[in-house]
Image (tube, rainbow, N blue to C red; front, side):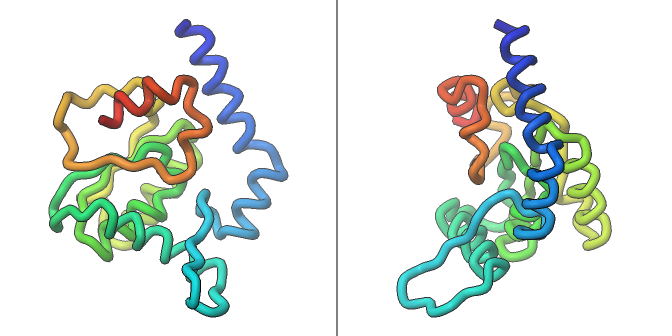
Length: 158
């Protein structure tokens, strides 16, 4: 089973390393790896504004007080974590399989002076080393589709 899971992780990493994937995420979404929220009646929104609205929607749904610790499962380049820190005051531990994503996330956090409240780890969120009740909340933003075993991943996040 561990060998199958490792092979699955290699395929996920391979998908994000393809030139078309890298170009699409960089050019269309500015490195963010999720799409936006376009509420009815909001008029024409830029893609960037809709992406930030989606992150705000997540922060509101988490409904946690500032200083709460949350897990970002599949953090990508850290954009969601940064938004949740700057807008909602949350402490975020992000996990991702791709080292380049983590480098960018750490660099963004450092540039914004947020390195102490945002931490990024190279981990598979289906097999996390954190103890039970380490976090006040957890989320995954459009990455659960990449989990080797989504039921196990949800147990880890629970």
